[in-house]
Image 1 (cartoon, rainbow, N blue to C red):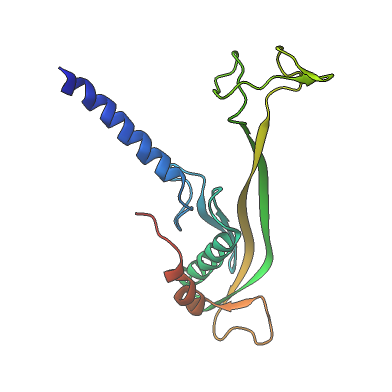
Image 2 (image 1 turned 30 degrees about the vertical axis):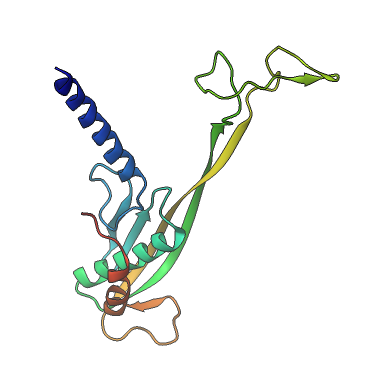
Length: 183
């Protein structure tokens, strides 16, 4: 009887652990929209102009997001039968939010958090009443990056002297192995 009760609990604990571990990894290089808003997306704007985006989760670094954007631009260029691309407009947006976490040393009978009970100190004595300023909170800054670019694609050798022009094959060869792919 006990074994049957433990199995559902074990399955639930394993599922929870897997779900949490999936949340802790950086956004893999892949298309957005497959159950997630993170990843790349692109669309053709004109015959030789595309709009490319890459959105990363809160664990994905700015460098990974920008490398993923360049890799996707190179892939779009090669898929459309061209040799090079130049970024016309390129931007990386940073979304910052603060995540509050109650101090582990604060306890309030109305709060779900447990910890030693600290009381409000006023006029030289400890009051048994609740802290009027509320629980101590620790704030953690969570960053999320999204990069976008409008690219123009072309044939032949890339334009000399243009710092925004890239050889698509070189970019794909150099950045492709550096980015994690979905499993």
